[in-house]
Structures are given as C-alpha cells and as structure tokens.
Amino acid sequence: MNKTIADIAHMAGVAKSTVSRYLNGGSVSVDTKRKIEQVVKATGYVPNTFAQSLKAKRTNIIGTVVPRLDSFATSHTLMGIDEELRSRHYQMLISNTSQDVKREIEALYDLGRQKISGIILLAAQITDDHLTAIRDIRIPVLLVGQQHEQIHSLIHDDYHAGYDIGAYVLSQGHREIAYVGVTEKDAAVGVQRKEGFKQAVRDALPEGSHTDDALQAAGYDIRYYETGFKMSDARIAASAILDQFKPSLMVCATDNIALGVINAAYSRGIAIPSDLSVTGFGGYDITAVIHPALTTVQYPYMEAGRVAAQNIMRLVEHKPVELVTVMNYSLIERESVDKR
Image (cartoon, rainbow, N blue to C red; front, side):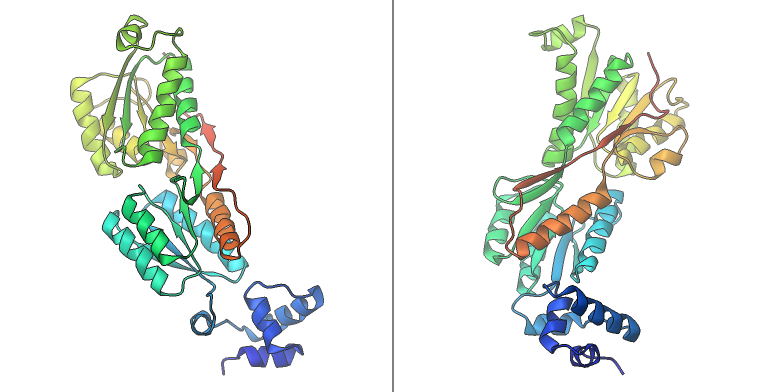
C-alpha cells in the first residue's frame, strides 16, 4: 500500500506539517531531515505532487515553455533544469510550442491557470503579446536565451562569442567570408552573434575605415546571408551561396547550420577545411566526433539550465535575483578552420 505523509510522519516520529515542510524544500533541523530521509528511502515514498498542488496555495511545479524538443540546446537546458528542480523537491512540466509564437502565448496562459509556481520561457523572440500574457498570469517568469528589460533573464554571452569567432578567423588570415545567420527576430542568435562578429571585423581595420569601400581596399569580401535553424534549410542555403560566392570560410550562427554547410560542401566535392573553412556556435556533442571536428563556441547548456532553475525558485520564494544573468562560453579551436 502506498504510504502517505501521515505515515511518513508517524514512522519518523515528527509532525505531519514537518514532513510537508521538508518535502516542499522548507527549513527543518539536520537531525529531523536525516530521520525523514531515512524513512523516505526505506519506504520508497514518492510525494503525490498533483494532490499537494490541489491543497497548496502555491505548487512545487515549474512550467517550461520550449520552442522545440529536437534541439541539442533545448534538451540539455531541460536536463539541467530538471536535475536542479528535483534536488529541491520541485517538478517540471514541459510545454512544447513547435516554434509557433501563438502557441507560446497560449502555453503561458494555460500554465498560469494550472497553479504553476513559476515559468521558465525559452523563446526565440519576445513580443508585446508575450509581455501582456506575463503581466496577466501574475506568476514569476524567467526568460532563457533572450533578454528583456522588463523580465528576469538568463542569457548566453552571444555578442562576445560572435566577437571572439570573428577575431579568431581573421587571425587565421581569412578575408573572403560568408556569414550565415538567422532571422533578426531572434535577438540572441540572429542579432547579437552577428553584431559581435561585425565588431571584430571593424576592430581589425584602421580607425574610421569601416565603410564597404574601405573593407574592399583592405582586401576583405564579407557577405551576410540568412537561413533557417534546420540543417536541411542550411544545406539548401549553402548550395545557393556557393553558386554565387567562393568564400574561404563560412561563419555559421549555429552548429546545425554549420553541419548543413559541411554537407553541402561535400556534395560538391569541396574539402573541409582546405577548400572551405567552417565555424559554428553551440558546442553540440556531434561537432567533436565528426571529421573534421568543428571549430565552434561551446555554451554550457546544462549549467544554464541548473542556474535557470535556481533563479526561478528564488523568484518563487520572493528572494532577490539579478535582472540579467549572463553565462560564459568557450571558443573551441578544432580542425575545420585552415590558415590562409
């Protein structure tokens, strides 16, 4: 027979309210915590989170709204969130929106009606409708991956990552470069990474010579393109680029785009990196095992998930949180970039 909180309290020799406080991450003494943990372990007791949520003013469930589930970044961020929440007796409820902004808004309202304590929102963009929904539901919301001045946010340092990639490829002698980005509706991936890269190019030129003519005079030919997030879209875009331009290097706004570029290059008999160098952003596991291994920016997605979980729990518990939390990154130099 399944044990109840009352059973656990009786076996541990403590009050039922003490067990409830322990299960909800509240403060209990070290000795009491040890007694309850021993009974929970011995009985295999699992709290009925749903039943608890019906009785409580605030549940121990955190909602997560994600644009897609078939993404390395999303899945690893969710793993980090889940690990951290479980360690504090919270649980995670996932709402997948399939990159549909209307579904994101609906998900915010749906979660708000379910007595969710807080929401972690992984969004590609923040619209006025998002802001209205967040105001209407009146529960803490944390953005992950994007930043907005009115909402607590956790972001990756996309601007400086873009800058470092730009400075690195220029130091390797590349001057004919295709930058393959995504829509600027995505402020992080579509804007910040590209702007960081552009600044690195500007800083490589003499002061005041940042015009297109000055770039050409200095021997640079840098062109900017846009594609989707899917590898198949990037493969098509890369083929079209290679029909009109012969860059020595392609800087890709995500690792998925880089993989699509590499596939398109191989289908044309273009060798990586001797004929075409390629870089990405993300640090997906597969980029280390393909040949040649991909030079990329590695983001700590699982750690970001853990920090996001810590931040939303602090917001739920009315504890102070910085308005913007910025995660670090690493530039991983591998085999996909050749010197020129």
